[in-house]
Length: 557
Image (cartoon, rainbow, N blue to C red; front, side, top):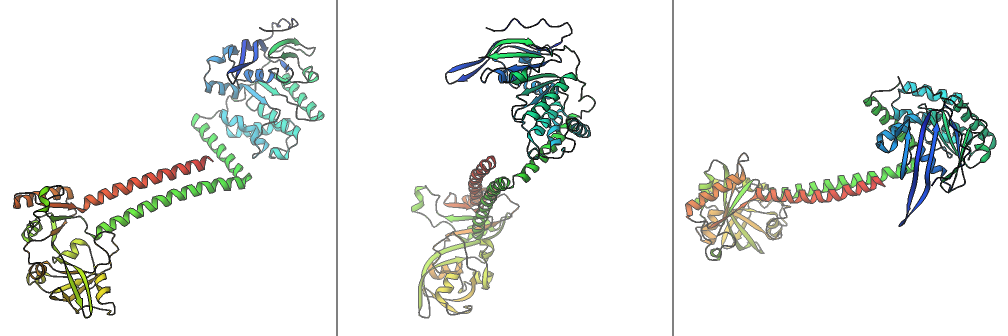
């Protein structure tokens, strides 16, 4: 229910209602219960009135002012402004109503400490889309009219409490402010500054502004034309004072004729916000430094992780390339999982390699035969791997010579006893010799003259990296060491313009057609490359996602 005094006077015919509250209730949750702050409030506030809302702390006067200023909404009841219910307004419409028809004066001023008095006053006009020159001129005029003409460029910290409150008043008037809502406007001021502010409010009221003032001081409330007293959320008194002078005068519109287009207003707000951010950064250097440090660390982490991921991927791909770029290796023996694999692995012949080498999509091919032998030089003897290879072995695998030369066609056809050694073999047999070219090794019972030394390989693939490897023509190994007519494998270097998967299918069909069965196994280096690229890419993405999350968390902090 509503408790009110019967002293409320009958409205004058000249009075024009602008605010009407009917049965307004405001409740707030408190755990499992609710607390009712306002009880069935019925009020009508007319154009041009100067109203004081008084009451003790906790009586609900600030809550009532917030509802009147559309800063809060009632739990129940109806509130109309200019005859339109605010309950039907969207959030943007409420914001427009506050921006263009209300001015707020707060007890603690709520000024932005990093910008000047003039810029503080101009803030409402920025969001209302007022032209830049027009708002600057109006802000300076308002401050000058309020006695702050020489303080327009001062920051709030350079102003006294009374001067800051005047800036707050000027800000409330920036967009016109049909209704001025003042929450304890003199509460934080000395007596003289308080009198000055009240004089300003009276002047504004005389100009047609509706003034709604919240105060706990009865003497201050007595200066208003109308007093509304609250107690425990009820209106217990609503009466007009001897100062009451009804009026329908309305302040002139300020925004009309000075609005920018929607896009220009957006740009204006953006640049104003950017300017304020720069001023805030300059005013709070340490905070800015710490914030930037967190973001810098986050960005550096993201860049480092992505760089490490890409670097690792390139290193792995380089290792694959060292085994042959875009190659297909055909291994002797049935595919893995085939029970015939253990019984028959003498299927590939040099002719199979030559048949594949004759295909238009193959650049070169190198047969290979593997064996082991005891290799001796002078008094040094080591068990070594002996690889029989073709004349195009270096081109197919991508390996390079540190010195000497490779095999040629005559080496293969004449079964030459030439030898190429890797770096391990050089260290094992010729540690004290700078250039082993021309030296003779005894490979098993076959003497071989060293004609080339391979570059040291940093590949992580292949056999034991400490085992010496000796390379000889595959024909020499087959005829003089293994005595076999079959090869263990051959490697085909593909034309880069041909799809490796298509070439793999064609080679498989060719050899199966020659053998009448699939007694071989293919290994496509490009498939390995793609698999590793996909895997490392996924890992990089995963780690980068973690780093990005860290960056976002750091940025929020």
